[in-house]
Length: 127
Image (cartoon, rainbow, N blue to C red; front, side):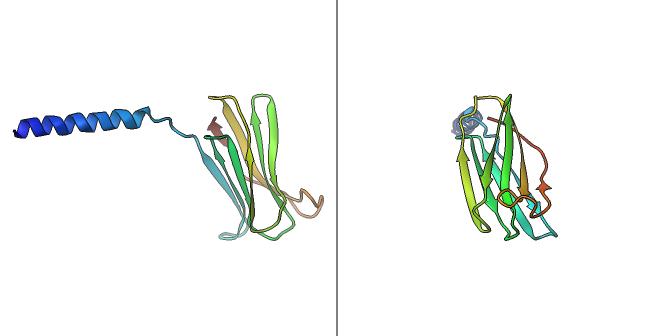
């Protein structure tokens, strides 16, 4: 009886592991730009399911929060120039299983020359 229970438990565990490994992995990332830490200026994330960027402007400094992206020869930006405390989501349709390269920037989008641009690190994801 103990052996039958152990075999049943093992079979259940194997089925659960196989089911979990069959779930597609999401390649999501995010980036944050800080002034003097912990003063957050802007942050953004990319969600591969739906190919969406969400960009937040976290500080009233005259800068817009922008996610610049490139997929193959196609490029663009998701711009949040709505002011501090706001977010903007941009929904795209990228080809599946391609690499997207993007970075977050806070710059004077609506007010050229207002302030120095701050550029975050390069991010790479799979769509």
